[in-house]
Image (cartoon, rainbow, N blue to C red; front, side):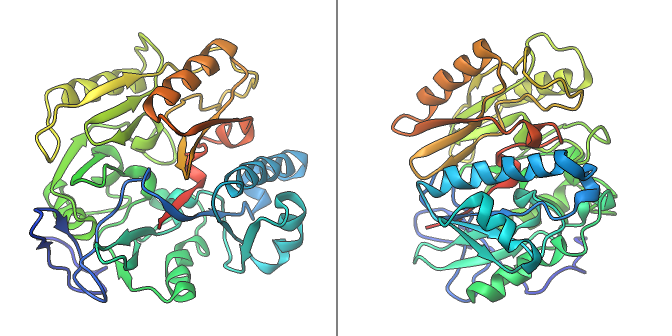
Length: 360
């Protein structure tokens, strides 16, 4: 039986006459999770507020400057809101300029994909906040402030607030806005987040909350990074039926073997509408400028904004150029914005990990 200790409201699945599945039918619902490439009302970011997580000093300041560089770039094309305690506002204003809105919601860390809510939408244009009960990636990091962010945003915006019956993070979900969800077993079926729940339990709850019709489970890598193998580091939904992956060609590490296994599963699977998946592969950077042993060099961790795609520039001219050309073909009509944000990628995440879209 599904453990319901987290439920705030009782969720019943609903279907429209078009056949699309929806989640909670309350306060203007039923709701669903739109695709990332759908128009945004804004992008939400969280300030890196705890120097001790990153060793403090000049390195921490460089990290903040990288986050601000990303915020300024996105703000050229859509509204951006940065969450931070009041004591950080002057620094943020200096680094981000006037185009970035600052809101006084306290944060522990900058990974907005995980500590911010999912923003749901209804066909009538209403929106709601879904709290995935962020617990510091299974208790691996302090999160007493981050775990309150979803409720604070719901209160700030005056939106319906839904509390999921599972624990997880936005970086552990890839959905196409058309009924299909991809996720990893290593992240979700894990006692550090969902003790006592199996795939069927978790799948049923995510279908209800996100308006999903088909869930595709991929293996992931358990216990090797803080996220337990978030899917957005290696496999991304471009649009229904089209995926992008990024890895090292011929990689026989555990990560490489799991990516190959995932691609084999996807090659034999159809999406919610019966489409086969087309997979475009973009190799990792192999000659990056940063010498950090923890550098995350996947191009899959990009972010799709209004009119643009934001992707890392690692200093590997061949790999960077290939990634730009591939993304331009995958997202025609959008500008491909290359950014040097090495400090983000040296800490296990990237551009997608520090952003969260709010649908228009």
